[in-house]
Figure 1 (cartoon, rainbow, N blue to C red):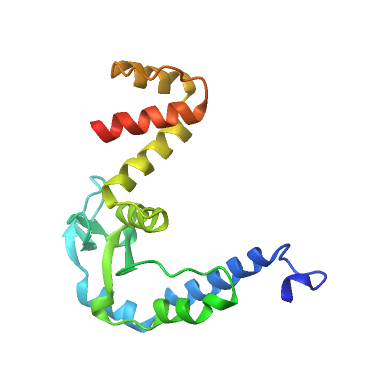
Figure 2: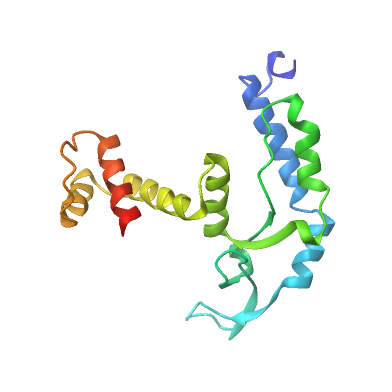
Amino acid sequence: MPWLVPGVPWKTESAFWVWVRGILRKGWSRHPVKIEYINLNRKQIVNPNPKGKKPTVWGMTCMQCGKDTVQSNIEIDHVGDNASFTGLHDVESYVKHLFLVDFESLESCCKKCHSIRSNAQNKGISFEESAIDKEVIRIMKEESKEDILYFIHSFLYNAGSLGNAEQRKQAVYEILKGA
């Protein structure tokens, strides 16, 4: 097995498969059908940068939220579920999912919506639940414990014990879900 060869960069089998998946994803970035899909679907949109020198820039419409987005914030997503890739047994199905595509199996998606959609697929939850989940994750990472407690209490949320991060995370999730 390649991850057992002395001097190679992979410390585990999992690390090896992450590397293989990365190599395949790099190939996806130059896939001719993907490139043609972009060429056929891109359009000039109003430049969202108020300091931009050009009044319009290349962009696409996110098929999830419907907003026109600059090209650099668009990703071309595969329609349907993500393909699993954890080992040799997944190679064929992953390659088929990634490379055997036509225009109907692709859609443009802004980076935010793509992240939410991928999270939803990975966790088996709805897009709406995933959007809340991603926001909770952001809040828990970026805000201080004191700010999180202030947020919770500002909604007159009676959560009982909020002594650990998991309890605070659950309270924030319930507040956002009810908002």
